[in-house]
Image (cartoon, rainbow, N blue to C red; front, side):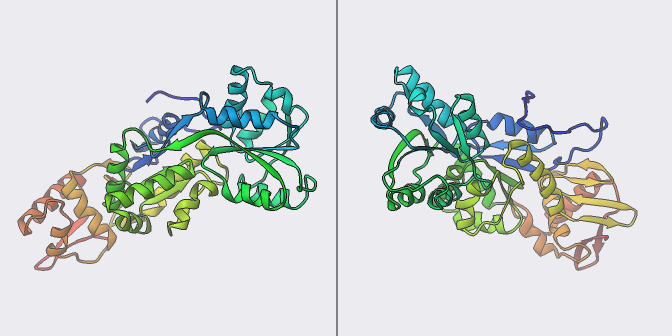
Length: 380
């Protein structure tokens, strides 16, 4: 995968041949925009990356709705502007220039509130007044700031709100309830991808625990994944998988909101950046699976592979399924009947014996013990 420029420094230096931290794990990327960059970050750390865009961006540069909203903003002086995304705010200004509409001049001197650092960068890049930005990068804190009177009384004030793909009903209704005149500016919309096949396969794979982590960089992508799971009839299985070991890793709390509302516990980096998101996956996935000690050997059972004494071992799917079942109950005896249920194609006691034989050959160490007439166990 082609190396890309990162949004924050990442130290990937390690001795040649050293095991990569995500080797043996499968990580899904639901992002549409910058998916190659996030995929590269994960790939460089050893992950098997699955791309399944959950949304796509429909720009409205030629859309009559955006033209109308821009003309409404230009119809009278504006007291405040809320910029919710950097790409959206920048795109709005560029579209207005293409239409010969003097938007930038109209907003010069107006206080512009940025929902996050990328929006703040777009404001400064346009030579406009970067007034304030919430620490949480959330629209809720923007509303709280405005309702507190920090920007002056709201009744009768004209406020332009740049939307970020979804309507912002709480922000808009809250401002209008306080007496503000709100002009909504829909710069782009989030919609389903044209090809929903990868997304549909992903929700099925999550329900079957075929991936180890799923990354999210926008709330609409998280909502789209849940909606697709509903349509495919696997929502219950998907939620159970997230509760049972598949990690949902979100770039920030705004992105995580649809998942948290559905009862999914999410992991989030301290800073809402792609580099930090990748580091969060690196930190959380290996700690999900305990390091097991079997005599003189150390065994770390990962998603589709295992690490034995620092060496990555990738057994065939059947033997790997047996190893995962044994690792869930380290030291306990797992019966042949229970192991049969772990084999994707089913089978019988002979199929289990063959899987164990192949597993032992792949590991090359006396880690799996036979307990006569009872089953097998890890020697931990």
